[in-house]
Amino acid sequence: GKEGRGQTNTRQKRKKSLVFWGLGLLVLVGLVLAVDRNKFRTCSETGFCLRNKSLQTKKGFSPFSLVPGSLLALPSGDRFVSEVVNNLNDHRFLLEVSSFGDDVFRVHLNEKQPLRPRFQATEALLPNLSPKAPSRSSSSSGDRLFGAVEISESPLSFKF
Image (cartoon, rainbow, N blue to C red):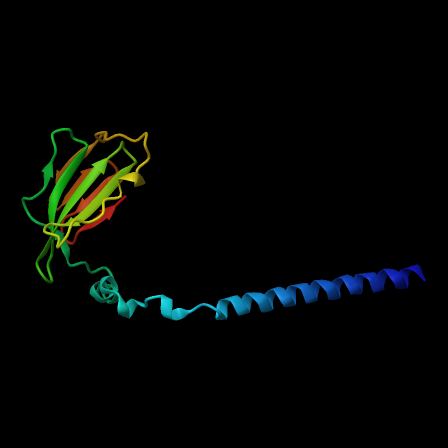
């Protein structure tokens, strides 16, 4: 007698659990289907994606490079600036790499002559970080070592 009741209780619990999970899955599917996709833009509708999607097709290819002779290390030693060019359309950018010690860096790339001023997210940095020159910095043919960051001039790339 008691064994039969125990198995019945287990089956009832299993049934309730399956019903609960089934209803949960049904509600989840309903929520997913209820999303209005017209409120979201696709890649083909955004300028950024359209301009940069072609770069994705050629692995390892980058049209960006540092403009020769434009690299300028600031006297404080905690950052350097350079001009960057897109070799496909000759569009110019300003690159600024700031050091906050040997293992914390900020890479900032802006258009040289923007159509309008861009938003600058200064709040993204932690408040206790202050600019600090890295312990090592050197330059060789086509590469620059700035702390733990190796920067290749052409094509422009960063290795951390």
